[in-house]
Image (tube, one colour):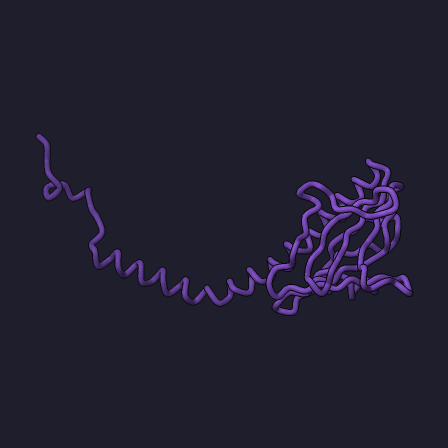
Length: 174
């Protein structure tokens, strides 16, 4: 004999009132958590920018060694942009691939390049990568909208670039 829902107490459901109450509680929890998530996404923009610049330094170093020509990571602090170029003959030219495009910093993120060389030409800010695997010593300080800083740096010509937080830089005495 087949029984209906009324006869079978094992089949249960939620009332409309219970569903609305659960939705209200979820909305309240999300409303309380939303302000703290805003800072998280802002901090990720800074870290993502540092990761992208680090990837470009690795690409420039690898390409310089494999092609036997000098590559540059160009940085324009005023325009908040950076891009790669390579040496052809006596001039530096744009790279004709997606790696040669100009990248722009996210909103409210800034950067500054620091180099140990005195007399460095600040109008043409760049880091050179040489065919023998060396590169210019430099530090790119990326500052986010919440004041957090991340450093993409290379302390000597034979080291690779790496990412360090402001605390790591301060504790290492750089």
